View 1 (cartoon, rainbow, N blue to C red):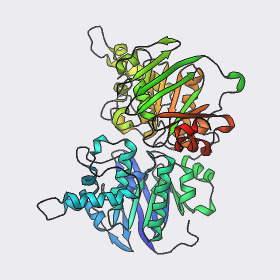
View 2 (tube, rainbow, N blue to C red; view 1 turned 90 degrees about the vertical axis):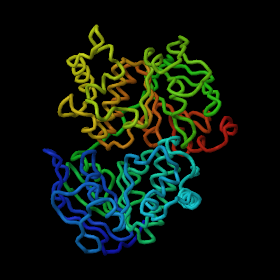
View 3 (cartoon, helix red, strand yellow; view 1 turned 60 degrees about the vertical axis):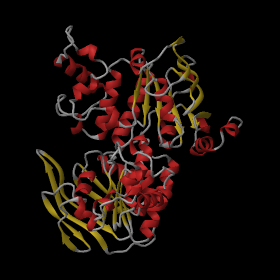
View 4 (cartoon, rainbow, N blue to C red; view 1 turned 180 degrees about the vertical axis):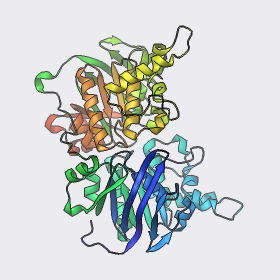
Length: 510
């Protein structure tokens, strides 16, 4: 982190306001960015962070306010104009073309303005490989649709790095990354800053702000709250400024020794999909929250999806309360009360264009349908209202589209959809990805309450502090095998990373 800071401003926003119908997203916001700094923007979902960055990138136009680049008043009317001004934005939501190669996605901006009639595939593959080389080993020729969410996020970042940026905006770039991949990104960010590139870094993770950024600006309810040098403030100060109150307990209390049960809800024995995981064996006990950790590509999500029969050809045994199950399709899994919440909330978790009520009932249409098979909208709305109330879901009208909700409330809708089938076991893949600290604390409390009510909870997360703070035990996966388990005092980041990175054979004796 820098010990001195240049005073010259590369970007300045003054009095920026924006409304979407009756909703005032930004109210007279001011912001400035110094040359060669990493400047964090923090705030709850709906605070206006992404709206402001979309204005800077020319995606939307402000209702009022001024934007200056190097003290010169500019009008940014489109992303193309922003790019010509040296501004690059990596969106929180992945915006790649799934049916073309990684290389074509990374070099799309350059090829779109090229006057050449033919595409030089060898050249763009070489350029893409160079950009990817610092981040990951994804083949430039691979189709984007075949990549995991985390790999797609790395491709988005590599795409931005190929642009000749003076200002680089990163909106939740580590939400889909493991700790190791995130550290690589942080190293790249610091090198770019040392070269004079200015970085705006949007994140909900306090540790990332205080380890990697020079200043932090906080927004709340579409308004500017404060800007501080990182050396002059604490994480607690930032959180309090974000939410307008102090959040003391991000994680609810874990099970005490006398509360632990030996009753097994779900038993998995020798689950194998030869291409992705082997001999996976574990028990999920009543009352506990079990975590699943591992690096990108280790097989965490694949194991959960394999148990639920969402993908793959698996062998092995799955028992629910001691009874062997024969699961052929995800519908079989749902019928037995075993459900999976996807890491890709907006791709697989919810239907953005459908109403909140329709989303909640999507897995349990039989509960809201008449005897003629037609959805009874009153029943559907009553179900969604009841489950929404139990999750403290915030919305204007239960009939409004899910796309109108904040990230945290969208995640609650996805959880409500799981609860509509009265589940016995829920697999939650990255349950707090992209949600603010207040919503994160609420989701953690919801999961603990579900576990206490007897629902089996298994959480997959790339955020090690979350696994350590939330879970009673953590299983670690490496290259498709469970290499160990940590609990109690042994549940540390070092121990988890050790089991995630060493050879499986050595881990068994560690």
